[in-house]
Image 1 (cartoon, rainbow, N blue to C red):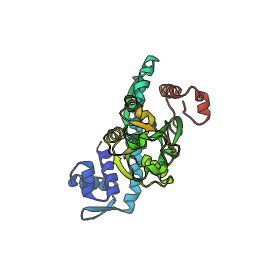
Image 2: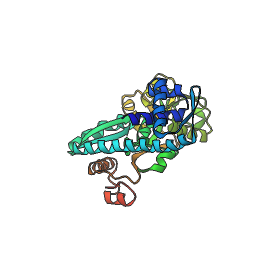
Image 3: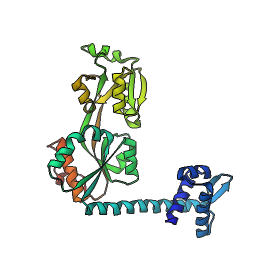
Image 4: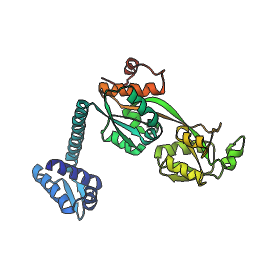
Length: 314
């Protein structure tokens, strides 16, 4: 695997342009970086970098090789996935990639039903935040995922077909004793100068801020890591929030939090099955897709209809 190590070193150095930074990213010494590049240059009998101190700039030959190096790296990743998928099919193991939100607030009901339905495969569940889940798609560790869909995400919009399973309704979340919760009607002006707690999710933050901006509200934003932390912060009186109803069910039932629908606030987030375009799927995967879709709606189109509309392929 020496060649692959050298290719990785070459790509990282080309991207960061610094021996120091490349060594940090690869967790190795700078002499190791230099040695790998030297061996590649000897192999191709051509200079790949112009060295100026600890910095490195690609030569014309280096730019040509970079294109091929990235293709080789991608091919190796795809080969790894193909081999792993083959192994999983043989052992009837289905690798499922889902958003942390979906795993936290839906799987407690879905998984027992899947088990009782007698699925012919075992599930390997990988739950990530949106950015990490998207990176798994970018790296082709998976060709599909169950996750939120943001139309502003150009990569997802262009590379995947989205089969919407449900929509989240975002509601105003307050501590039960908050003055706004005591009002029969909440007006837009009542939210002026409030502290709004938001998650560390670029696309969700953008969507929420766009909706609040439409209302011409002047509020203070305070970022928290995820919905669970935000709920705890709201309970402690650190601010108000807008969260999906599904994430609030338990706290509403126990009276720990109050949720209000606002007629002037209209933010719904799609969640669904994202399938990479022009990609074949196994019978086990298609079976799982159908089970997920039927869980959320009995009125979804049948498998044949979905395939005709550019859905999953056998």
